[in-house]
Image (tube, rainbow, N blue to C red):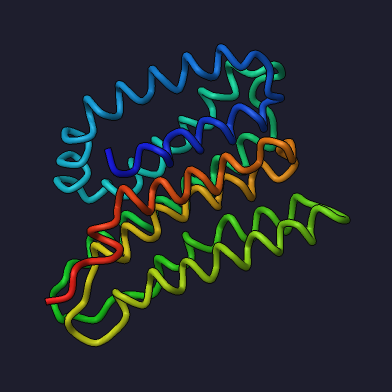
Length: 211
């Protein structure tokens, strides 16, 4: 439930990349995926923890949201949907691998950072002109948030994986906004609002009370 706003931002980005279209279709999808998420999140979490492929299946589910949202848009699935969806899949796969690190005082591996870099690479490759400048601005915000989140897992013991994972999950919204870079200016506030909502819902993990 804490990360439901990131599901909405995934759907919004996929829908916009597919050409936008009928808002009522988008709202119907948001209601549907919300019910599925709330009803099945416990099962999916247990499944991900019980298999070595958990981080990958987690990423693929986010990719699927992009595809499904694009299917209800005016133009359907296109190259932007696929590439930005794959970038999202890679980013969330990286989150899944960091979630497996645990709080034990063993060294944390750095290679999942490769997955987190995917949205940055895709945005710089696929955008041109003024859109590159806008992408760089949002990437700076996302990078700063990622660095803040990773600080809690790469620091000396005590490690706090929950704060890292919760922070990276909130960053999903920024990844979606980078993907939907040309989203209408009058409605672009929706993405920061979803980010703030995710942070608020994850408040206990992101800002635990001091002992």
